[in-house]
Length: 403
Image 1 (spheres, rainbow, N blue to C red):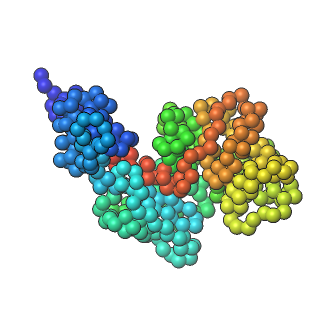
Image 2: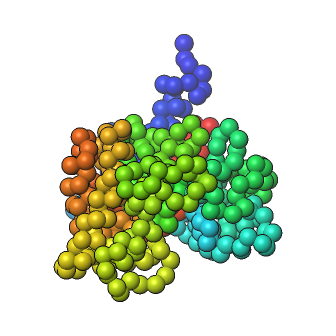
Image 3: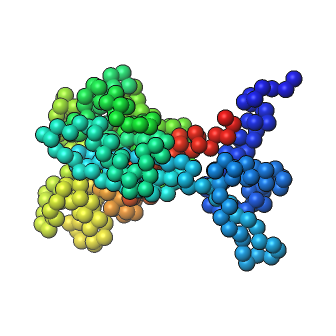
């Protein structure tokens, strides 16, 4: 008895599976010929031809040209139609909201930055989000209706039981218990929210240093110090979304602070966060400390220390590495990850020199010895992760030819 339409194993489902496999190959490789798609998918030439004709008719692929400079007749080339779908991402900090739109191939086609209006302007957060999104949509030459999905990245995490943002007291206006409802009313497309460091881990897993890794920890150090945990290929968020909030982690070298969510000091953040770097430099007697926001100052000092060959800067980098390894030792002892990715400007600016120092210290402090690598995604990694997250769902929806 033949199965009904949509049942696994039926022609419709098998065609949809082949369609998606071909689309994923085109996303990965770019332009491909019918013959090449057939070889990569294991489909016969007639079946590959039917597949491409079907996808072209559905507006999912474009015939873009022909092969040249090879023996035999030129072959038609195909690529994913960039206009088949669009997704958006937002990176929210206390200073600004950075928004971007990407087409279904992952190419960023519009970007907009909305400075934070300040605490006393009375502009609702939902309106700020909508304004930032509209700016990116306009920059892309699109309309709101063209956006399939939005992912919003923020510090902290929205508690799934209360709907309130936790672990991000420094983000004014984002703590209303009705905020998610207000965002849903203001936004015309489905949206999701995610912790900013988790999104950096997603970007590294999809595009960077953690590709092909299913168990890793990402340590982020920029405006704040945090971690993301990927276990079995999936983000581990914790019961309240607070997994990875390692800035609160009690560590040797700092006072034990109680009521840590109310205090602004103590823990791993005080020991090894970006604000600790210029303080450590001053204690060592380094005088030419640049001015500016502490995260930028920390990155500049770490970069300088990694490239200069004098005693003071070598000691700065070594002391910083010891502090970083102190907190990492607790993480890797509990999780035993395959890989640790160092990300955020206060870590990546130290390059291979800092990485090697932290690796050596960690091997003395923890029985588990994961490999440490420096993150590859450097340009707006939170935003890139938000786009990758939104694109994954958008592709699932747009590329589903079984409906």
